[in-house]
Length: 153
Image (cartoon, rainbow, N blue to C red; front, top):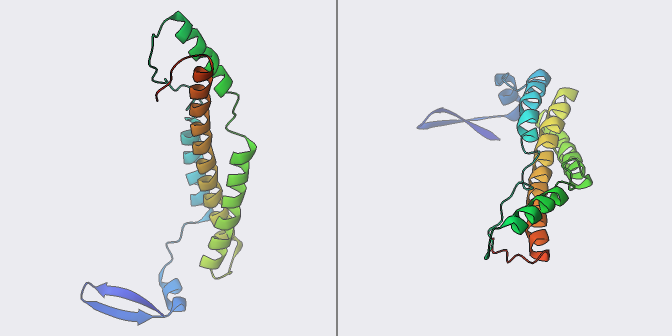
């Protein structure tokens, strides 16, 4: 049993079946695809994120520091955003999102599954990409510390 709010002071119980007939504004597969096309450029904007980190050091920021920072940034860029962790997160997100989409549609059609999988894959992939960004930042910090710079943040 679910409740539909008609007015802030009145509540009327409705069944899930009647509620699903009332709501025809569910996103379609085309809308999910459009969301993907908008989200992908935003995710790709993080391509150099993390590797471009400027660590805070306790010491001189001379030519040696600059050369070491550039070298460490190149090392950090080896941690690719299309790594296995990101792909795994995207796959898990797609699987869970597909199941949620299928359950949300009461198992009625493939569109709910595909839409949920698409959104779940994007969320999972974005989470994995954010983790990669943190990995890259840590690589720069550890590399600089390994080269003798006193990194404090």
